[in-house]
Length: 208
Image (tube, rainbow, N blue to C red):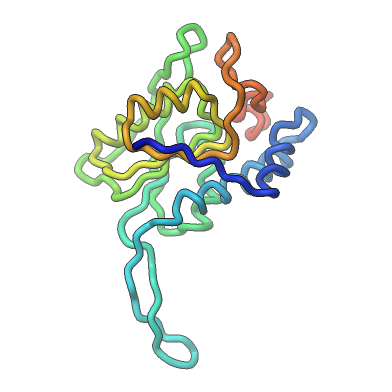
């Protein structure tokens, strides 16, 4: 069964407000996005498989654990790139695989321009990273691409999501889990999330 997980925490609410605020400059926006990504990533990774290992402390040998399997971070260019660093801080051995899509403003459909997944080398577990889950078109395309690659476990990490995108993604990709900080009212006539935060890519990269 597909599931939507909304991360609820006082600091999430605080950073979301900074992210939405039109008056926040690019530094404030990036910082808030960084912090929110960490919250979402912690929640989305809480049931990762681990294996037991032996380590030597300054005192003696003891048992410990490390993440088992290859973890892939899959940012959807370009805004998803801003979510990579905070997840790498949590899971430093992750592999980063980029998928490039942009939304056709007339059709609202994703247009591919970049993908370089090595055939025969799928990761064991993939986190798709995109700050905004709006229509769901890019997310669905990314999921299908990863499934074709051979990834069996995929999770969607976003900061703000629209009901339309959630509905489409969960209908077309069964058993997918979505992790987000907020589910907003919906999409406007231009398919932007309302109330949203504007264009995440432009704001994070200061290209307004």
